[in-house]
Each structure stands twice: as C-alpha cells, then as structure tokens.
Length: 399
Ligand SMILES: NC(=O)c1ccc[n+]([C@@H]2O[C@H](COP(=O)([O-])OP(=O)(O)OC[C@H]3O[C@@H](n4cnc5c(N)ncnc54)[C@H](O)[C@@H]3O)[C@@H](O)[C@H]2O)c1
Ligand SMILES: O=C(O)[C@H](O)COP(=O)(O)O
Image 1 (cartoon, rainbow, N blue to C red):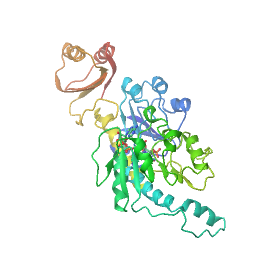
Image 2: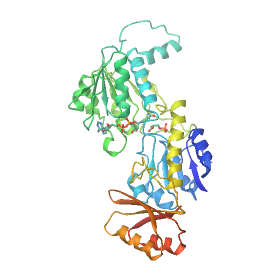
Image 3: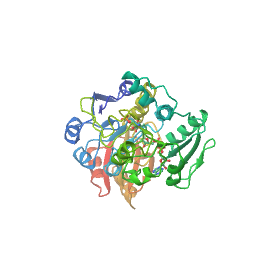
C-alpha cells in the first residue's frame, strides 16, 4: 500500500477518494511545513499533497528519493521546482480549473466594492461615523476592466464583467481568443493607462516576479484600482504601498502577498495593513466549499491513477501517458534520459530474461522519457536491478 501525506488542510474529499481506491495509507497534516520539517514528514511517503504554501525545492526532492508523485491541490504550481521534480522522475499534478470560478467571482465582487468605496465606508461606519456621500463612488457599468493574463481565470473574469456591464480589455504574452467583446491590448502599458480596474491573473515564478513595478503603477489613472489574486511576487508591494499612500491610486484588493504566513498562528505582516481603501484577504481566492471539494477529488484521482497504473495524464512537468488500467501481471515504469538507444537496451533486457512485452507506451518531454511496459510474467529482482542500473535510467518501478 502506498503512503500519501496530505498537508495544508486539503479537503476531506481527497482522503475519501484515496480510501475508496484502497491504495493509500493517508497521513494528514494541517499546515505547510518548511524544508527540514517537510523532509521528516515525508520520510517513506510515495506521494505528497500540498497547496500553495508548501515549497518543494530541488534540495527537498534530493532528500526524498522514495517520493514518486506530487499533487498540488490548487491551480498554481510555482511552489514546486518542476524541472527538478521531472529530473528526479517525479510527476506533478494540479487542478487547473476547479477554483477558477471562485476567483473570478471574488474579483467582480471586489471591483464593485472598490469603485463604491465600500472598504472605507465600512470601516468608518464601524467607528460610528455616518459618511453618507456619493463623492468618489461609481458604478462599474461602462467602466473599463483591464485583465493582465487572459488565461482560464482572466477570461472567466472578463465574461462575468461584461454581464454586469463593464467593458473589458486584456493583455497576454500569448495570442488569445477574445471572449465576448473583450479587446486585446498591444501592450501592458496601454492597458494600465486606460483601465479603471486592473486585475492580475498571470502565473507566479521568476518570469512574472515584480511584473507590476513602481513605473508601471505610475501609468495607472489616480482614480483606478488594482486587484491581485494571482501570486504575491507579481506586484512590487512597496511601490504599491507608496502609490496608495500618496493618493496616486484609488484603492486595491490583494489576496496574495510576497510573504504569507504558513499557518493561522503566524502574524500577517504587510505595509498595506491599516489602509482603509485596501481590501486584504488571506489567500482565499480559491477557497470556497465547492472549489475545495472538487480540487480534492480531482487531484486525488490523478494521484490514484498514477500510483495504481503509472499513468500521467495532466501532469504539468512530465511526459503524459493517457490512463490505461493495468491488466497484466507486471507493469514496469521507467523514467530515463531522453536519448537514443534507451528503449532498445531496455527491451533487450526483457528479451534476455525471456519476457514477452504485451504492451508498451512511450512519451517524451524535453530531456525526460517515460515508458510503461506490460508483461504477463513476474519480474525478477535481478531484472529490476539491471533496468535500474542502465546508465540513462532515472527511476524504474514495478507495479
Ligand atoms: N488567489 C487564489 O486563491 C488563486 C486561485 C487560483 C489561481 N491563482 C493564481 O492565478 C494564476 C492564474 O491562473 P489561471 O488558471 O488563469 O492560469 P492560466 O495558465 O490559465 O493563465 C495565465 C495566463 O497568464 C498569461 N501570462 C503569463 N505571463 C504573462 C505576462 N508576463 N504578462 C501577461 N500575461 C502573461 C499566460 O499566457 C496565460 O494566458 C495561477 O497561476 C495562480 O497562481 C490564485
Ligand atoms: O493556485 C491556486 O489555486 C491558489 O493560489 C489557491 O491556493 P491554496 O490552495 O493555497 O488556497
């Protein structure tokens, strides 16, 4: 039986599915862990389930040679060193659409709240002030929403925004089909200069780190607002803080931060705390009951298929082999460097052992090759060792 460690309060639907599949001993831990604690917690684990706060680095992977798969129970996968994981023969799975709608709904709600100045009015009313005025409060109807990163979430935000009467434009580094009446912008700078509401939906990682610099914030209209529910590193937070405090921006809504607490005991530290025109939320864009339940099932299913059959459909860093039930006595999963002669040598090893190959499925992705081989007989320890000792082999498992 495989062992899976699930961190960060992954929804119970995950454990339920894994239990039903009968393939895993499940250990559940409530928080994210730092490298050393993580290595300890994952000793002997075949797979791990994480959310956005657990970082799986090359160093962590190096210390866990028995770890075979990683499930990110969320959309973002920038918290995992995907290249190092592939190099260790470890596929990474995620849930690419299960919380898209939850984030999009939050963005629309916050756009309306910010344009109506509700965050400030809410705080003042709580303090006993009766600030009844229309000054500086606007409808979102006919306002221009600028979406940076027109992927799954960005496009969904655009559709919802049009349904409440907003005009929509977007900027993406890739050419995208505009949905509804959304207008592609040639540059991010043009979008920043024109939009009344700017919302960020790019992936995290080095390519988008501090995408929104002080110079780019300075292009925005003083009446405009900025929303970030993507990743904290995307915005230069000190520059945003200065723009808000100096009145160069009307407001902001932030769900993600450069430094986020790993659990509910740690204090949240941010220069934006205390600004009445800023909505701060604790990275809950995708945290709805619906989304979390769906994510739990979706990623657990991908892990279960991998652990039971070795198939890797929807892996984000790894050659994808569509799901095929194991129907023969033995299935050999071989991850290797993608170079000439590997399969020929491997098949010669099978032939030498007198084994007939019933089915074989190979896929490659960049430097990594992955081949699933089905044979009707048992595989001897000697053959497994021989396959493992081939110079190009990264990992070879028998299921
Ligand atoms: N706050 C939350 O709880 C929450 C929930 C879900 C997802 N997210 C974050 O939202 C991100 C986006 O999710 P998605 O499902 O829409 O991803 P996606 O991959 O479907 O879309 C991302 C889009 O950004 C574009 N892009 C990449 N770099 C860009 C750049 N420099 N400028 C402009 N566009 C760029 C890509 O081409 C792509 O179209 C995720 O990676 C995740 O980090 C946050
Ligand atoms: O990438 C995601 O899906 C979001 O950032 C949500 O992350 P979470 O599971 O840690 O809430």
